[in-house]
Image (cartoon, helix red, strand yellow):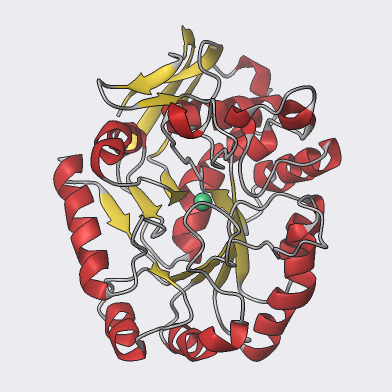
Length: 349
Ligand SMILES: [Zn+2]
């Protein structure tokens, strides 16, 4: 039945996990998010991580000003670290300057060197989150030289996450950018208040798209994309309408100089320009277009106890070529699937 659908109208989606960065990059990437998303959670791993509420307020005010759209909203989580000013943290949570808190295990991804390698240090902050029904957002990877890069999610879940769940039974948790069958199944089966965001690239790529032949820096992200069976499981859970899974692009722009011609390739894929369109293609391939709105515009809002957006967007089956780059005179960011034909297009909103 779905094969015949060539027009959709859905509640304007939210992007529950995105990197908007700062300065010129922010200016360049923000319009892509403002156009097709009503709200977003902007990650706090800036060059100077966001660890006090005045910085969170400053960052969200700046984004709103630049967005120049009265309907757009942005949420900024606190960046958990080993030296939390609990008083400032609690005020920030209670006054909604922070949208929960983000846990980066140290050195797991871009600007995570200030992150956490001793969970005990963040337990007082997790108490505050739990008391205030405020979410803990997790980059769920255990970084250890003895653990394969492909198994980091499993090890984090089996060790750190289990410990957190045991101590904080009512803490609302989101495993961000879930990347493995093991992780998605865990979220599905858990009786805790736990959910996951799912990126489009984890539903389109496997490790052969990154590591066969020369490493493809433009498909290199954290957590790394995995095997076919993982991709299939992520598609199954995301496209099923399961309320524990919702949209978070993890769109993560880097200037070309951090991706090409360097031995220190930064992790992250810039997907914002085609995000809604490619999620739509994936749901179409899975014969699940009827669940697209649930995944992109309803499940996340419900999990976070937020109202649904009142605006809608229209998506039509129209072929167009995605430009290779998002760029201005100073910055050049490779678009995911740049130069390729895209089969859906957001036509108005
Ligand atoms: Zn991220």
